[in-house]
Image (cartoon, rainbow, N blue to C red):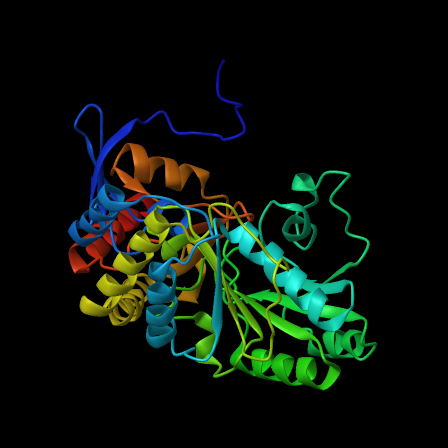
Length: 375
């Protein structure tokens, strides 16, 4: 038996990782400015992360949600305190797609409605509901019905307002910053108006912070730049720093009922130990502030370069749009300069999603390499 080959992969076998760096089986060192799809939040192999997971697995690694698991409550409390959403509740699952799936179901349970409004260039996952509201027909199978999904262009407030006035929509789902679509941040004004029209029409507002959350934008959640309060917030990726974990932060207006949601592995002891380590390190090492500072520094070093058409994003969630496809640039960064970077749905966009603890050494290494390639 072989792996089902659905991923285009680089011919590199990574065997070791530390901080913002990884090493292959030949001992070659690479700078990771991609963070494994924005998953590596606190850095590879962080000592506290390793210690937390090791200690937990020596005690108990898993039992089902049929028993009380105090570490779940500890994680929920710390997440509330650090994010500022202290009065929200947390449902834990295993991935971002699963988080969005459950958020959309909760919205439908709450409203009794079946339609969902999403946005062009949006990506929310590959499970049934999540992929249906994702703007990519290539990854939607015939069973992924889009019959009740409407997608609007980001910032089209008039169109969204007119649609929501019908009161047919259970939810609006929007990314704090669109990631795979090419790093597009909704304006604060648009998010504020969107929150208002959702409240007026009884529509649940879901903020997908799976890629943009956990400090990556320079705030705990990217939507916090607008000062709004969504009904549901979905998280994953940086939440576990590589350990599979996801969650839905649920506003206090929602009432839980037994059997409404469920999961076998969600909120298991190991996942929670990983999640607690991430929150502790983010707070202790000031990683949210660092993400904001280093993001501004990277932008300042690359603004004005003629080949770069536009720089988008916040913090350490950045997209650089060029006049032509970036495949060659990414390839040279990897092969010649040993730097991992990311792509986007648009072939002309280079994405940066490094660990939140990078410093000027790593930023300058990337900037120098990119400038040399462009020159």
